[in-house]
Length: 383
Image (cartoon, rainbow, N blue to C red; front, side):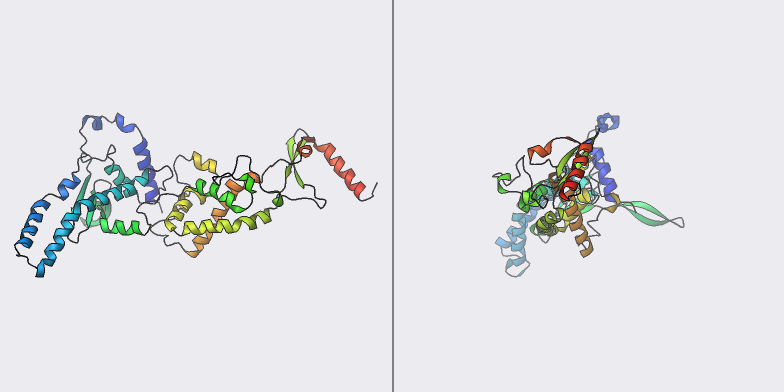
């Protein structure tokens, strides 16, 4: 089953970032009208209505007892301009998330279109068939409606004895009270993908793997940071236990070996706490899953992605997968931990040079093996 949001958002991003429209002669020669007159249309006639209600109250000719209904209407009309400004400001802030570099294209693509309309991008004007309406509702809330070519749905109809599909208008409608209620509960209309790099880099100094002198005043690891010696494997005599890396041409070098089990036990509680924080806002977790951690990619691969669509067919849907099942929560925690280890922790445990200067030199593998064999004979009195 194709992921319509994914496909549409990737297309829209490509379209909006492309310069191709500059070479469309039909677009260049026509006037693009972006004057949707949202406030003018919404408040057309409001002044006359306000005057009528005010006169009814002042002359005690109200239709309700003690003018209760009329007073409520008057209050709504007086508050409406500020409600409109707050509503449109909040809405634009939400829609602009669709332009973020790491935006998850699994969000509803209609919000990307709505942002393109509101930010007057080429191809989304009244001339192109788009229209936006702001309406004042009787309950004091307001709603905005987006109409146009993208705001349609397939609808089956009977035509000459056959069922066919046609495109029917399906405007995107957002209510001011509903949007406010969402934002008041820290829920987003369009989710902003967490910046994984920032949170994981902040997690490293907190794990207890590094000595305090390896952490600067901003609680960040210094450039020369190394994992504490207590997590490095040693021989029974206290010397470092090295892994030998074959450099080719008969040469090799020593690298430190780490107690990965001990490291895992140390970092796991901190990772679990980070995961719990992300899961407290499940839509954030879904965005992080879709953009970063689902496919076990590296940070270099993520940076080189032309589009943020790593999860592909394994994407989680905001509409279908929320609230997250316990199974998916566990899977998210496991994948998050693996992503952290692969991209942020392993660089401190892979191919680390010895701290003993004499052990850091490149050596001949054949001679080293002979010396190791002779040491074994000497230690066991086998000469």
